[in-house]
Image 1 (cartoon, one colour):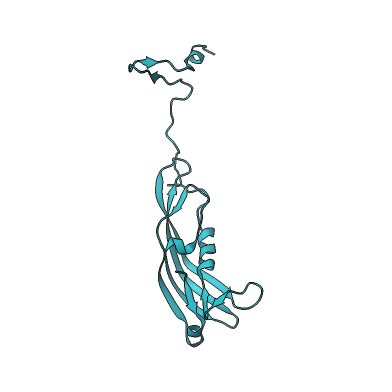
Image 2 (cartoon, helix red, strand yellow):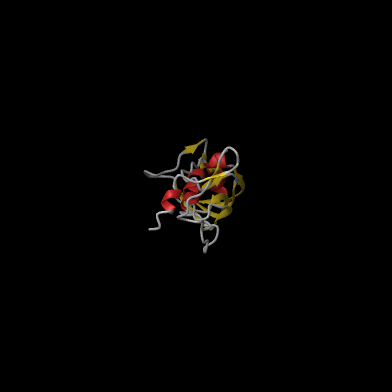
Amino acid sequence: MPLRVNLHHLTRRTVTLHGELPVASLDIETQDEMIRLDRPLHYHMTVEKLADQLLAHGQLTLDLDCGCVRCLRRFRHVVRLADWVCSVPLTGPEQAVVEEDCVDLTPYVREDILLAFPQHPLCAPGCPGLEPTDRGKASTQRGAEGAECPSVWSKLDELGL
C-alpha cells in the first residue's frame, strides 16, 4: 500500500495526507544488524501542485529497534522529521512516475527516512560500553564430574612474565 496522491485533486486545492505506512510498503532493507524496523511510519503532510512539481511538507515519524554499538543493549530510537519538505518533479529527467493520475510519494519518503537513520546507534551519548571482564586470566572449566579442570591456557599464567 504505497503513499499516493491524485494529481486531479491537486488542481483544485492542496491535499492533506495523514496515517500510517506499513514497514513492508517502505521496502527498506537495512544491512545493519543493529537497526531493525518493526513499526509503521506515521506521516502527516500537505501536498500542493506548483507549476511543474509537487511540494510535500509535514512530519514523518518512525520508531526503530536498535542495538547499542558499545554495550549491545536493545533500545528504541525515534526518527522524527518534524519539518520535512520534499519537491517531486513532474517533468524532466527525474520526473515522478504517474500511474492512473497518481504519484507515489513512497520513494521520496524512504530516501529521507534512510538518510535520518543513526550511523552508529548509541543507547545514551555517554554509554561506557560493555562491562570489563577479568582479562589476562585463563578461565577454568568444569569436567564431567563437576570438578574444576584447568584451562589449556593456564600454563601461560604460571610463566610469570
